[in-house]
Length: 283
Image 1: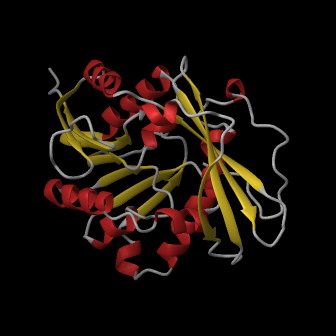
Image 2 (image 1 turned 120 degrees about the vertical axis):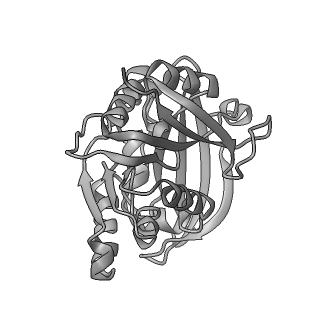
Image 3 (image 1 turned 60 degrees about the vertical axis):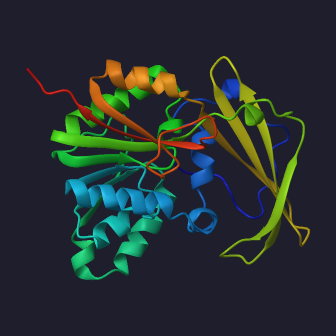
């Protein structure tokens, strides 16, 4: 998931229309992943999901296939836990950051990880896995029913008998979908980890209710007076009943749904869902 974003980039004259977004390869799926250092700064402190996937992988045993390996935030802890991991990532900048982290790791750890750049909907690997994971909203970059169905077919092809497919997704929040697209929602300043620039930060939200796409514009304004820039992020809003039906029709059974990496059943206050499912035995 790649491209766009340099500290001297001029902001777009006007937001891209939602009609120009929506495919897994479009700007709204790519731009957020162009700056791996900033991505790690923003999300590096997330631990609940890392701990959950490592624990589940230890329970099931390897090998593990990870869709959306990114910079290795979950990949490397899995390898440190003694598991063989195959990581798939579309964004070249993220993959390069993961490769750099691996290059600094001990040889025995490097030997447990294989990385592939590719589209999770189409990439076929010559191997099957005990566990397939899609962490941290990977499925939200599947913008249509067909794209979701394509991924589920790839998951089925890569699962060993008795294997599990585990993923997590944010639950659509009514307040985000109803926000005024012309209003900026400011947040605290951030400091870029590579340039050292102090950046003003704000977000704008634009929701397409027909295609269920939420476009978030992340706006950066350097406090030193340098030109500002905007980074779009497009997420499909998959409602829980949609996902349950898609998994059911694809042949996934024993669906276990839990809330926010707590292991507890979801309720009306859930922010993210963790889904753990298997495949029905073949004839």
